[in-house]
View 1 (cartoon, one colour):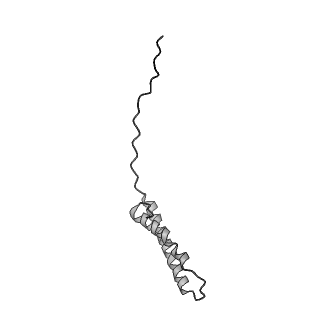
View 2 (cartoon, one colour):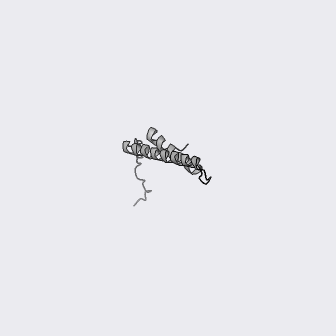
View 3 (spheres, one colour):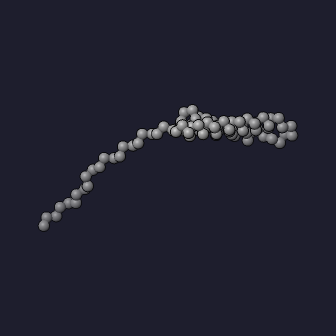
Length: 84
């Protein structure tokens, strides 16, 4: 009996990557609605904070809602989630 070196399995081709899917229209519509809600909430909070005469209301809480508003509106318009 002659000893043979072990044989490797035949090479396999890698699976081609799937093309990226376009974002769904429903998701983009929901993002637009969420962006509009955040924008209205931020605007109302900012107006209330600026009209407060006691000096206890801070407009910075309302300004913090601008970041998610921009992200949602940008996703609704472009279909891509980018924070920069």
